[in-house]
Length: 438
Image 1 (tube, helix red, strand yellow):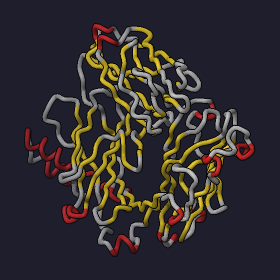
Image 2 (tube, helix red, strand yellow):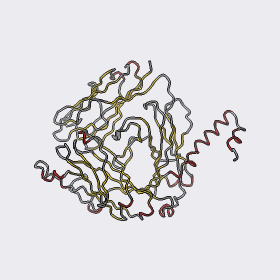
Image 3 (cartoon, helix red, strand yellow):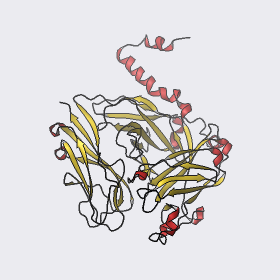
Image 4 (cartoon, helix red, strand yellow):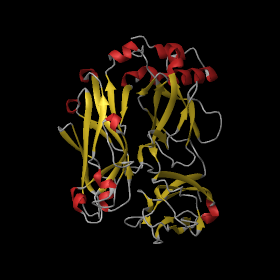
């Protein structure tokens, strides 16, 4: 076999060799892994009688059976929800390569157990517990592979249910749901729209500075440039578990109101590039990145590139980054009616060597009431709480290194609201500390 690499590289020396090497390997993923890219059609749940989903409440609520007879809750509007949603998907199922259900789920009242969903009266799928059964506060984003034979070409009925478990009221909320259909490579829709030959991949650009930034860019045939609306970049790495699935080495990020959050970044114009800020990530190998491509004329269609893996964090000398979680989280970690809650985070970095520090926390914001400073670190107030909209807030808060203690660091939570208050979601608050080595 002709050794084309030897034939080419034998003629090149020095800088020319390096430039060619970067060029070849920056484009190599496009040709080596293009067959692994996936086209997905997205069918989001829509509330309202016009979509077949009448509701007695502004949110999609699921209740344990006992709630309909509970003397304290049976007459509340939330309990009238039957846990069933319809999602219209008009697709020839024989043209699908797969299907999956994606959810944004408030974990429910602590102790709620056995969250599950059945599809069209066929199969029952469990929703992986994210800590609620152990009486923690949680919010999760499960992605459930489905059997195509459980679906139908038309209205698909998803019946959600749960058990009371050890909770005072077995109950959880599905804020958003999306039935995602993977199209076969030669799907008639792709052929009609001229997308059968679309392929894309992520590659890493050469870095021209000493900053701990990883420049990434989408590679794709330029004939499709006018059709791309936006590109979202997601990373796989060791970091704070902002999506609460219990994994620190994982694909990071989530959606809020169907929009991406806590991802590497998004690009809205050519050349569809971003910079992956790794300055507050622990030193590591085995990182990866992928892109989700959105199209201008087809808002319900996305293309997910194959992962570009084997990435190593930028070389740093004389310093390191560590993540410190709390080991004494209360169950549940919430505050209401002026009843405070607290935890501690043990840090073993000498404060004199700390260069930067961040506090990461995800909360379910039910309101602070009249409390002026509902969230504090070592007595210092932090703006972790929002406007009480009963939604998820993920905060990355810069911390003055002078506040960080070598040893226990105390987190205090306080809300004067009479009802819901503030929940600190799993995995709880964490301090990420960049410090010089001794």
